[in-house]
Length: 171
Image 1 (cartoon, rainbow, N blue to C red):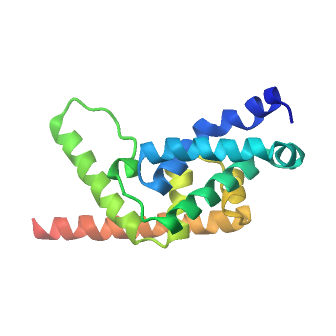
Image 2: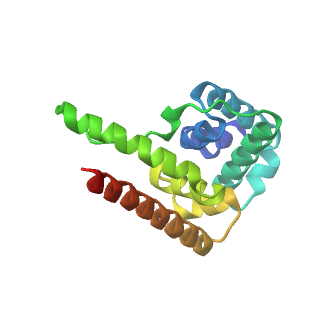
């Protein structure tokens, strides 16, 4: 794999890697450093990368494994901004407050989910990855990814229902 191929097939994926890496490592600064290290590792192994049948999956798997290795060495500093959902813009202060509150509640629910379900839910619903990309990164079959995602969404729904029913009964 030459420089131009590497730039187009591997380096171009760095922007798509950023949300996953930032979430896994806990903040943006660590994610930027990690992506640089990941790209260096991939550049050193560019001949292997070029021969791989699924380059995108290989890049995502390499990034995920690198983050896991870093996390084993050191506990991450969790920055809650990595869990933020994109919310609708509103000029109404009340609506903005409600969206912020919902973000906090969902963040707490996500922390309770099993790690694999949480990771899949966040990769799919927050980062916008395709099932094939998630399957390659986590090394599971697409069908299993779909099942885990469904279970995670169901659990989030149940917890939200509990929270809002409780609040309605209090009033």
